[in-house]
Length: 293
Image (cartoon, rainbow, N blue to C red; front, side, top):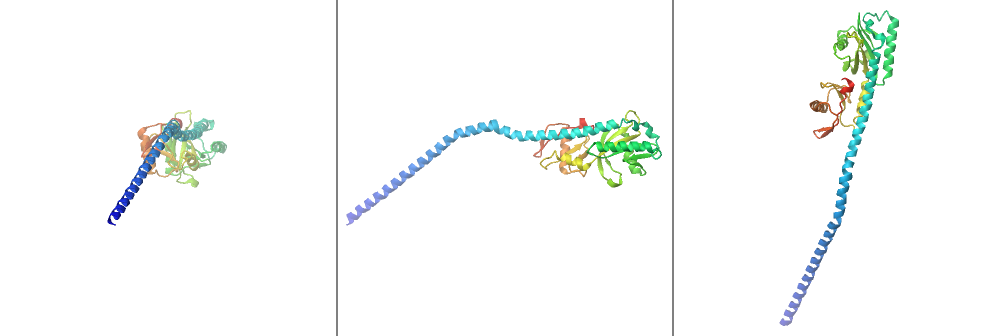
């Protein structure tokens, strides 16, 4: 019995080792097949990777640049439209400043007594106002026998602050220029406007007055917002000395973003080339040559 049991034990051990050997062989085969499958997948994916890299190299870069170029073209078209609007206003005021009614004779004219001439001038101012959709009001200041202001109705400036505000325009060296000025009419009291000024008479060295076109701040701000189509960022008119004439947010105080952007633009000078600062892309366009700002 003992021998038999030993034989059984030996047989049982052989079965166990045989089962282990078979299991190990199966594991080896499975590992071999798995490695083979992975190798086949890697080899078969190489052509796809090569094709993908080639497509990205030729088409991917183009797809990345096309939206940027499209955005740049849209900005340029909208800037050209604004440029056209401003050029029209400048050409219009330069034309009207040569009107014979706005001659040096205004210095001695009594607007209260010479009713017919006053009425003709008021009519001219109203025609000028209606000729531009951006103009909110056209004014004529005459520093004659009295400080007259036609806005467009006839009035006399009695307050010193109002008189100084208009009279200082005559001390500017340029015949035609842009500036910011407070409105002195009762319906727009203390409201700042972007104003185009042309001193008169246009053909004589001594200026006795000024022709002013006040732009509608709301309309102009809406027009500037078209340059920020994603409602992100800011657009503003700035003179070469850093004075911001108008922003797409209105005539309010400058924001921190606007101050940092103004600093970067002043440091780089007039340029049409986009640049980045603090991770934000900035598109600039110099219009000083067109706007005489």
